[in-house]
Length: 266
Image (tube, rainbow, N blue to C red; front, side, top):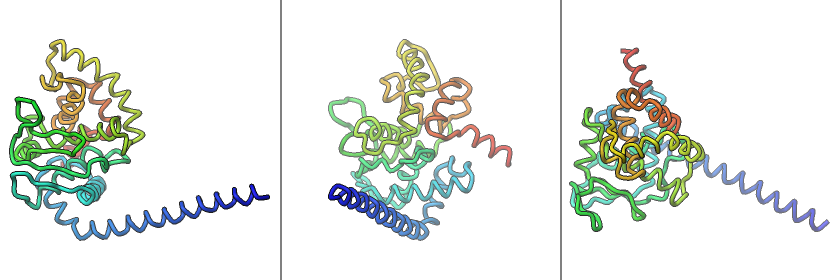
């Protein structure tokens, strides 16, 4: 009888905890949506005027993108090193993170509480070449000058914001394992079946749209692939179709189809 009572007590406690936790999460989401409504116009204006891809996706995707950018923005602490803070800085950086993770369930990159914004290229550690950005255990670092060039240039397949967020996404899934996305982790193995042979061929001298830097190591190959996937989807799909399809499945996004839909509607 005592065992039955204990079991009932345990199950009742679990049930009550789940019930209260669900109500609490619902309340938090309600509060966040109310806060988002106050900032939606500001976010939409800045993101739509700076990130081209935002204007190509449909309205439902834009709403999801804006809300996730707001949640990301609220969850991070932005530090400005040698550069004056501007209104658009944290919003556009948050929007870039939201762009990469639009198709995933877990998008907050929650291991990273701190994001550091620097004015220009900078030196890091013992490396002789300057950095445009990097990710390590202390946070996400970005050169604002290079970040802006990346989101505003339509022809160089380069986007340092997407590049560093790609590193951060891999970091929380495979290194800290603090914000794992089940689909992303599972599908990354399938992505690698396609990607690793291409990477190995590039290390042997093969030239591709990804460029020489992608052959530095597999981490950089992944981050550069993300840049080109969004910035030059037409050519990536043409030149490396299997890699493109693997990335579309991995990220649950298809910029090429988005472009075709936009052209058809024009």
